[in-house]
Length: 456
Image (tube, rainbow, N blue to C red):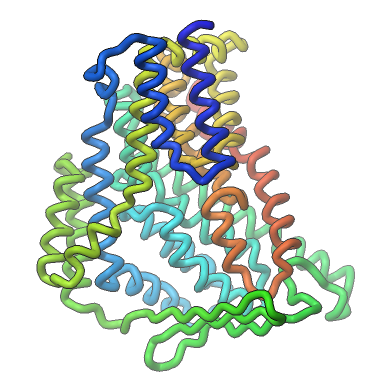
């Protein structure tokens, strides 16, 4: 068996194991680096770790540390609170305001599941109170998080930029822009589809009792109280499931509308971080660490807690997978796979296949890991071809992210867990059907709209 095939089979085994068992795929990546690198390629210990992404490690540590500080001092809650207050009673706008809040959070560097975890409870509680279908509301929040997830200062945006380097035609700003426009488009289409479906259902059955769905209150009943916004600025969400199985009470305490000095400083630090990275090309990791440390020193009670808020699991995942991908490259497997895809007829068709593969795998596995695997496979495929490199990179990254609405992903699971006044089993089936449609049309649509027009 060739080294190329062994390294690819080991990679496939990692994805399967991480999908079926609660183990960080980064750990498997480091194990695979040792086993394949030592016993198949005969590499030395120094060569095994030559692909460790030290710069990216520092960047993710810095960005997630700054976000942890922002979360601890209430800056994140302040953003969410102000977003909800902006609508002033116009309920139809609330999902879109929360879409914007989720976008802002991830664009600042918040990891998408963290943004969804913050915003989804508010959105789905609001949907329950105002008898709105929780599926399009929840999906709108997820796509808001995905819209900002590839910004130049986000973890995923930095990951992609770090892997492609100075590839001609690639721009971090274009990557962010295409992801934002694409995610917004999918969110709009989702809202329009379910709005049309509701009007069609209402016209067919005029009786109030006739419109029963997984998004409607169940016959067994559950006492759900949506968000109440009293003068003090608190949002209270209480969920109680009748029977003896589960009782959950959650209260979201959001800060006052007036920002504290620490919150103002945090917002200024985030803006400065973005400007320093995009305009002056300064090291984001060092800037974020310096800003986070300065703010934490001002509020000493957050100094140690902020370190605990660093996304160590994400860092382990990214570091382990990128280190193993360097072993896969050393084995020649990247060029081997790219040549196989390229033999399908043309690089353009090869990009389509890679987009679809990234979407299908990402629906069940970590999209971050999928991006770390797919982008290196893309580069030799498009090198020297008429395919627009920047758009192809954007399409593959978006194809891996757009399917994060799957109930097997963290984002989809958060929507499922926070939906109120629904039959959980039926709502799960609805999310599953919806995500299956997204998996089928999302990646090809990214290819058709981003790659094809710029490669002909």
